[in-house]
Image (cartoon, rainbow, N blue to C red; front, side, top):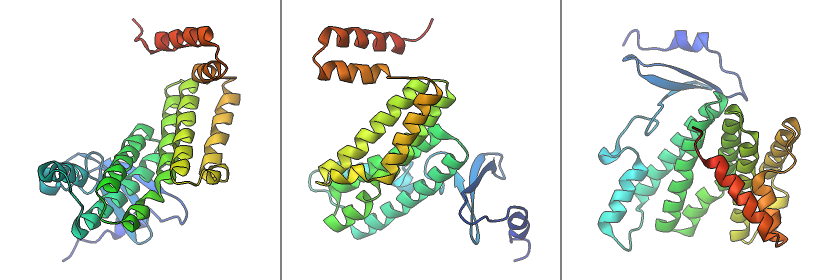
Length: 246
């Protein structure tokens, strides 16, 4: 049919190989949507819920649908081949939207979508029909953790709290290290390029904002050296900072 092409949009928004080209715009009804320019066209995604806007079985996401199915079936719930395929679709959709948020510096939204896939991966590992299918997802866990940690740290910097940014980077590095150790590959952490990039970001933040050690780092050191009185004082300071300002 005529007038259903997107020639004008593609001409005005050229594709740049190697770059993540994303933008936030409005749908026909005025709602906010996010678009990703790809090699032969573009992807349009909803900003909330499932990126394709679908509600599988009436649930907000397919993950939510599967949680309900697991609860209904009880012990012994195992994903079928069709459910595995649908889960894979949702993993990809949330990845595509996550890279859009990172490109657009919408860091809190990137954290939200990373958390969705990480939690979904935990569920899938528990109810997986095979070790092979589980491994096909788990291989990407360090990459998702990298994105999540980077986004969370940059969000804290945007909010003006460099110390929290360093704390987020430390927690992310710990989670990546734990992943390798749980898979009997602890030595791989030292050679992991993503972990190295997070370490470099942490030291850059430390240098630019003149932070020697954060309170959390000082607390860890005090406990490790059995300086318990100092540790108690640091805990008090941490709790004091968590209290809302009047």
